[in-house]
Image 1 (cartoon, rainbow, N blue to C red):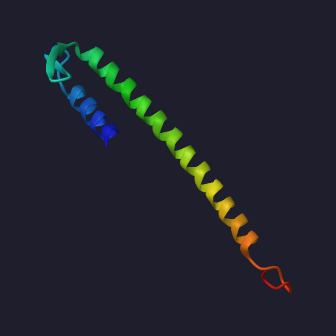
Image 2: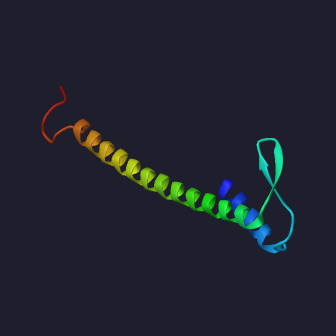
Length: 87
């Protein structure tokens, strides 16, 4: 969601003139800022969000794999061995 917001903001900044007055939200204040600096900060933020997304995706894949392995092992441990009665 935040990535989409950053993308939209960068797109709008690209549409504005280089000398346009830009304001940046800092807490509950709006502060006048330079367009190139704001654009650079937003691009850096987007890159950070992309990196976090990639890391979280890899972690999710690793955890899913571990859960699947644990589930398979548990099913093997709980399944009765052929020809032996359950205790």
